[in-house]
Length: 457
Image 1 (cartoon, rainbow, N blue to C red):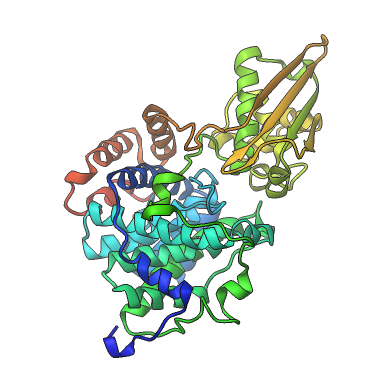
Image 2 (tube, helix red, strand yellow):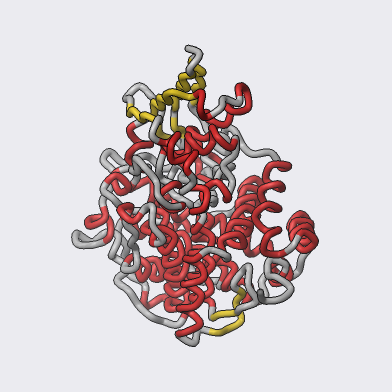
């Protein structure tokens, strides 16, 4: 953007301008690398789901063919539609990562948007990781101003705030200057959307796809000279005025520390809503220690935070989408199977008599005393048996939380379990090995191609 086009900016726009100068750290790149690995696995696994298939059919039907890869398939689309389809696929299983600062899922918006542009431009893995860090920092800057009020009012922040992360990441990737990046963010402000009321349906995954797509589009439009009102973040009728500012606002991190270094990213061990991970932890630990038989269980009392019940509103589940947002189901299937993998949230498992019967014995109670916030969901699980014993398991911090991270071995196991059904064992192993030498690749396209099957099914 030419110097004579620049204007005096308000405080929000000025801060967004200043964010353009941020520099990734070695730690932030490593966090981005692990999050990207996890996200690629989720996209490949999700490519086989109904939401991803429908999204791909729609894009192909609109003549969106191009050079950006749809992971888990042999199809190629233009960058924005590719970001859309990969975003839908990556969130369809709700197995993707999360961060407390946005109460959302960062990578499933950032990675599809970044890869769509990086692949078409032949960019390096280093550029991809730096773009990820930039996108995360911009998104969390918005989150510090808006969360939790914005989320509590019903917005799905993965989309409504994530769109700014995707836009900033793409702007960094294609080399937009600070003013052009601000302009791209102002364009994206008119595409911020996503309603929590759609949790438990296919449309939740649509939110991630549309945010990734909007981020690509906003950056490319700004690069071509498409303009927006860059005062939209300070205007009385602008974005923050309409979408809500947290009061009092949380202070930004001191000394220019990066949010990704401080708060980190949580990688999920189970394919359910993040608010259900603690419940599954407690039930799986109970299964591992005691292996109670379903017929011996007379009652299950699940005491959780109010936040957990607000995010997971379903009292019963009749399909896989609802099951991911149903605490009684999460507890019941974990007590029966001792696992929380993709298979535990497929329709065929959800509708079986054993889990449907046990789900009826789970009573969920919200308690103000239970820990909540900062990615923690406190739980006390009491499993009452016919012989009079009561098995009690309590915890505050779920597995996969940045304070209780998955090990490298656990992450590798998750990657292989997600990708092998689509790619085959040999190619999944090859993809994991390539990721471990990411910095030695000249072009991100080589890694992307390994996440596509050798032939179309």
